[in-house]
Amino acid sequence: MTANDIIKDIKNRKYKPIYLLHGEEPYFIDLISSQIEDSVLSDAEKGFNQTVWYGKDTDIMTVLNAAKRYPMMAEYQVVIVKEAQDMKWGKDDVDKKGINPVLSYFENPLSTTILVFCYKYGKFDKRKKAYKAIEKKGLVFESGTLYDNKVPAWIESYGAGKNYKISAQAASMLCEYLGNDLSKIANELDKLMLNVPAGQEITLKEIQDNIGISKEYNVFELQSALIRRDVLKANQIINYFEANPKANPIVLILGNLNNFFSKVLLYHYVKGRTPQDAARELGVNPYFIKDYETASRMFDFYKCMQIIGWLREYDLKSKGVNSTASHGELLKELVFKILH
Image (cartoon, rainbow, N blue to C red):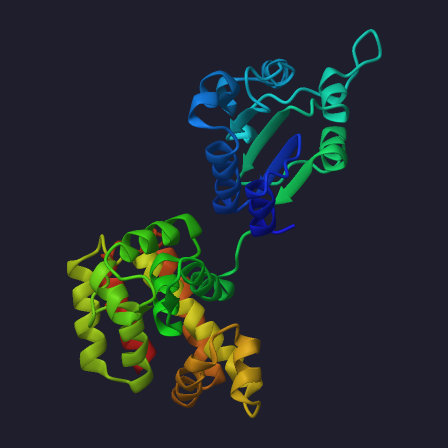
């Protein structure tokens, strides 16, 4: 099931007695657990029937003892363990009576308790009996990392879910600027939507006006200047980055350039295909294929390989490996090499 499927069931009051939400991407884990925390019980019922712990402050037996209670003046009780990866889970061993108390509950959970484990930044060990028991009696959801090339589509979908159309260019710029941190992207979009009427298209202008991205001096414009081999504009942008390092960290700039030139390199392999086929291979919106086609003429296969090598070299230098130069100086050196 997808996160949306699970949330739909929760809204329809179709609950599982145990939820194990695990994986590298915390956004979907938070989304599902928040839906349970906010909607299962009324405000009046929560006082007696909702318990929220953090993993480092509890252990599995304390949680299960709470889960075994019956709700008071409500149909359900909710027990949520946030940051469950920090909790002491116990072992699969049995006691002197041949019983494992953890497995005993997971195999026979109380139907009036909704027990939620939010296990973030990693996968729960699927070899454990606890995992198999929860999978059989409850619901296991693995929240995988969304790859960079999938984030713009997710941004557009997120906007559509809130009655906003987000242009492909705006979605791509937001992805380039914020990376694949879905929680951060959702937070920025929610703030932006307070200033944009519902139903209106969110374009590059709204992103630039509301999320603090300079209209003239950003990574998109730097890429454009490099494609045109516009030495003056590229250096103006680098000077702006140097003067505003907090808003333009070098790790973000190098990462975006590496992503861009890696796609230009890949484009050399898909030349001659239709724009739609090339876009699918590159994992980008067809709207941007012309940029990669132009860049491939400016930077041949071997130059792209050389640039990617330089980007890795300057990433190490920016971290102090064999270099004491400032980040601004490093970017100027790198841009000079790329353009000459």
